[in-house]
Image (cartoon, rainbow, N blue to C red):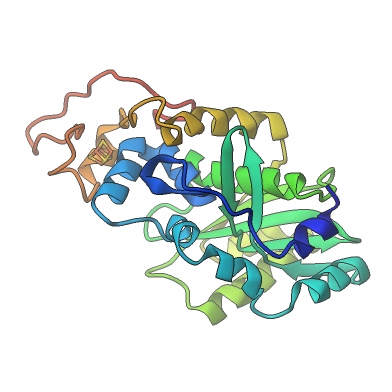
Length: 270
Ligand code: SF4
C-alpha cells in the first residue's frame, strides 16, 4: 500500500467487535501493557479503568482519525513530500496477525519523505535510566504500523526517551521537549542533552520480525484462546493498585515474599 493512500483513507473499516472486552481494535499501549502484566490489563477492563488509548479505540477513534488536529490529511501529505525535515504525529493503523491495531506515537520525524525517527517520550518519578521492555515494545509496534501503512522504514530508528519528572507534562512543555529531542537527534547531541537534563535516550533499529512475534503472542489473549497470564514479579504486585483484589496477586502482605513459578510472556520476568 502507498502511504499516501493510507493517510487519505477516510475511515477505519467498519467491523463488528470481535476481540475480548468487545473491542474492534486494540490500542498499541494496551498490547505493550500485556508485557508488564496481562492480568493487570484484564483487571483494568473488568474494573472499568480502561487505558486511555484503548478507550479511544472503543469510542471515538474514528473522530480521532479524522481530526488531524493541526493540519488536514491532504496538507500533511504535502508537507511530508515537500519538507526536507518534518516533525509530526498522526494515528497509525494496521493489521498484525489477526489483530487490528491502532495507536498514536508522540512524534515521527521525516527526512526527505521517509520516517527517520519515531519518538515516544515517557516521564517517571523513579529511575529514568531504567529501560522497561513494555515501553520499548510500544515504540516497536508503532514502527511496524508505520511500515504497514506503506512508509519506507529502511532508515527508521525507534527512540524511547525517559525523563524524570514529577507529574505529567503539560501539552506546551511536551511540545517543547519534543522539539528539543528532535534537535538533539538531528545534531547527534543526545549525550549532551542527557548531561543537562534528567533524560535518557534508548535508540533501537526497526526490526519487523521481532515485533511481529511479540504481537502474535499477545493476540491469543484478545482472541480468547487463553486466559490472561499474570506477572511473576512480586515487586509489580506490591506496587499494583489491584494487589488486594487480583486473584493472581503475589502480594500476600509485608511478611510474605515467595514467588510462584508461572507462565511468562516473551519479555516478562524483569
Ligand atoms: S496484583 Fe500482580 S498479578 Fe495481579 S494485576 Fe497486579 S501486577 Fe498483575
